[in-house]
Amino acid sequence: MKTVTSIEKRNSVKKDYNTIAEQYSEEFGKIYEDEDVINEFISKLKPNSKILDLGGGTGKLTDLFIKKGYEAICYDFSLEMMKKAKEFYPNIPYILDDMLNMEQHFKKNTFDGIIAFYSLFHIPREDINNVFASINKLLNEDGIFCFVVQLGDGEDFIDEPYLKENGKNVLYFNFFTKEQIEKLLKNNNFKKIYETEKEEIGEDELGEEGNNKIFVIAKKTKF
Ligand SMILES: C[S@@+](CC[C@H](N)C(=O)[O-])C[C@H]1O[C@@H](n2cnc3c(N)ncnc32)[C@H](O)[C@@H]1O
Image 1 (cartoon, protein in one colour):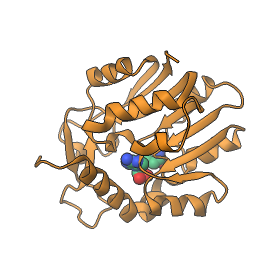
Image 2 (cartoon, protein in one colour):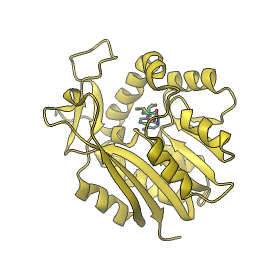
Image 3 (tube, rainbow, N blue to C red):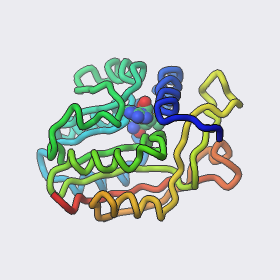
Image 4 (cartoon, rainbow, N blue to C red):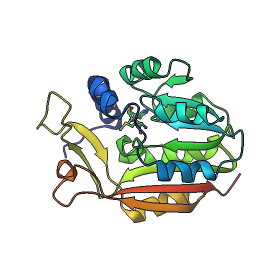
């Protein structure tokens, strides 16, 4: 891959989600996949927990958590995804910004749970450790962090069928090895408490071998 800076990668992801917001939200905007993992995450939360939905897109998880009686905030940097969220779930709180800036919006120890569903694989490789560190800071003692990423190695721009540039490999992905995930957790004081892998649907789009998705739930171990 030619040298692309972090800001270029993130700007391209933002532009891509602004472009595909309509189609993405039609297909995924309201349906709940991975209920098993979401229920597992919820089972580890205290009553009245405050949750941050990082890269929350159309806000469906934020809405689910609020309906279940939690306080929740959606956080995403795509204006068009936010517009869809406001259309589907007009009352959810929403912060429109890059995840890399999350510490500017919240004090330390603000959340009991942070979930990053299908969003951390768009964080540039050079920034991912900082994002884990920020998540740790924003979590309370014993706070719970849940995320899903794509297994693999390296970073790449891949084809996104919704984009007009279909076939031109434009959507930035950062793939994770299991070792990298373990290192990120350890470096940032998280203890893994749950893990499951699922086969990626439409794996042709993600290379010949296909890339399993890995779901992780971890607990903050240091205050
Ligand atoms: C595949 S969608 C997932 C949306 C939602 N979490 C879900 O499960 O349906 C990825 C989302 O992450 C957001 N995202 C990617 N990189 C981001 C960043 N650096 N800061 C904030 N949001 C980001 C995108 O705008 C997009 O809405």
